[in-house]
Image 1 (cartoon, rainbow, N blue to C red):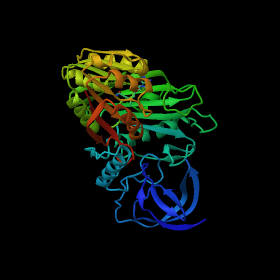
Image 2 (tube, rainbow, N blue to C red):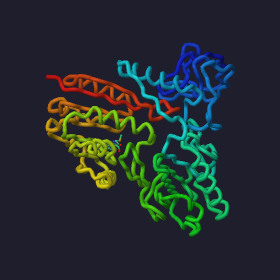
Image 3 (cartoon, helix red, strand yellow):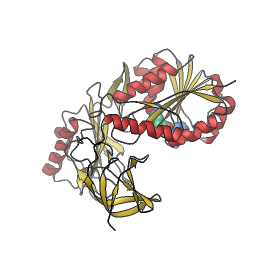
Image 4 (cartoon, protein in one colour):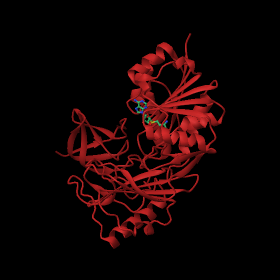
Length: 419
Ligand SMILES: C[S@@+](CC[C@H](N)C(=O)[O-])C[C@H]1O[C@@H](n2cnc3c(N)ncnc32)[C@H](O)[C@@H]1O
């Protein structure tokens, strides 16, 4: 099958959408106005996705992507759109999903903003997964979205492999020693962490010599067949944690802890949440490493945090101590949280699945006056809002572009309890 068609719009996942006879086809890495020749398609989630295609004529909307791997690497889908159009795309997406006009705050940096990359080390290449595959890897020398230190680390990894004749992981077969290298950087502190993830085996003792410039160097072992970029810490050299500093608040980063991936935009997100806090008693629910709780605690609030991951809670406690904040973080589940009305403000930042049904019901029956909902998934946010509106009025909604060049967007919703 070969057909020529014109891209009309982007869908919510950032894929160009065009008519193909009576059906619609999605074409990745395209812009509205592109003329494409589609040679082959496959069904993906009941939609038609072009897997072989050629762009015959480029739309005038396009800009030159900065990254040489754009169009192959699965990391960025929108680098070919000028940044203001990426923001318009995200505003339109939120408008269509939430039914509310939402302004999206742009990221102050759109390259070098990511503070973490997970690089696959495999027989297919050392880099990122090829778009649309789990088995193929695009070999890269640098990731512009992370910044120049990615080049340095990638070059050291290759040198280490070549000189020590190490074996690389074979995706699908579960053979080979080296699996991932995860690089994390404090954008406001300059701290650098390198975590090499291997299968079980012996790491040559020369390893630390290749990464002397890293402030913190880890070796982790993934003993499972799961293709994940973390494992049990086997050894570390240098500092146990690196630090990131957001608007004067310090956060420790460990290889196995989560941290907001765009430090520059995280500052804006934190300022927004802090400005919406009302009253002195605050619950930070789904508190992770305490990012929100500690920030608002620094501004004087008395904070309690609840989070199901015990390691994240341990990190949150360390972060509170580091900043001299008197906040209490406890391990707990969203569905068990009670007495929500005893807090002046509750901040919720749930995972992509949204609020647990039982928590949603409790918020409706016995919720605080002031509720701040931080969401990374507008679809589950829309569902939750539908119910919360029984007792809450939406006062303000703002998007934050934490993830330039991707279709994702973070949203902060301010809700007030109605009489
Ligand atoms: C979007 S992250 C929030 C991160 C946090 N605000 C931060 O910046 O570190 C969602 C958090 O919810 C936690 N979580 C997931 N399911 C949960 C549950 N059922 N009860 C409590 N916490 C949960 C995850 O471990 C994760 O830390």
